[in-house]
Length: 452
Ligand SMILES: [Zn+2]
Image (cartoon, rainbow, N blue to C red):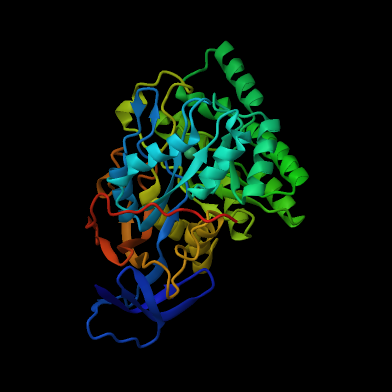
């Protein structure tokens, strides 16, 4: 089937131009003014923005913690994506024990996703202690298309700083990118012990239990290691202005380090932990202060942070309420569906980002960093026809009823959106139009990443 999208404003990482787009089969075949195609279905996009499909580079669908599963599985999670203009998500293949064979972990995760995904997906590979030096398994993972490794400095999964150094060196040789959850474990544990001694352990104390210094210290130490290895490193979900400033500093020295932040760190503050809804906002790292929001926007605007992703990890209010403390309340918030409209409303309209910058942080940069470019992340002839038509005039007071996550709530309730996705194409197929999901489970494909 062919589609001709007429008269919209085409936005890429470089520019905004009034142009038509011609789609044949699953690819974009032409872009320019005054295109015609007799057999194509015409979609009038006058007054709308045409963006490359959004990439949410950090999601957790169908993820177990013990017996507790996230509310969204690979199907509902990717329906959520489609309805938010997101055409590629990057989830995780995650071993449960160091003894697990990474090859089997990867194949198992691919099987879990295969018949359910409604948009395309790729995978990061989580490494547990010992995996970081299993060169054969890491090579096999890269060959399979998992070109980014995820390590933690905290939790039971944590690697020592030394082991992360080893991991960075091995990844460099393989052309893979190490991504890291950076919160210093010792600082997190000492904050927790202090609060336990004071009997202040409810979700209200979540921000105090994982202080900004924990993130800043871990980032500082990891930047030092990356510098020694002269190798790239990517920080997931940067939450503090302090960490963003450290990243900016070493980037100015020419080191290839990258940072991601999330809409909740840009738009929400720790004040919500004082309310009865504290568990609904509990994620790690926690929300910070307004000055952090501002510094993170600034870092995005100046290119010191390169990606906004959501860390979508959904639990229902009932699942959240089962927690009795900041450490046993399921951590995470839903976010994929609101990623694009929030970044447009509060990033572009408020003057932090230009339209090309919006496309950079939500599509082109993640595509490049995770080996999906130029198939994803652009609107050139030859690219997959993953396209969002975005209506900048559609206004919406955000509430859970208009959204599709099985979480059943949004941490952004009450935010005013000025601009909303109108249509989403996945490889040439219309999978979302004006509030309705039109795709089907299993329609998404695994997109292997290419090494750097
Ligand atoms: Zn995460």
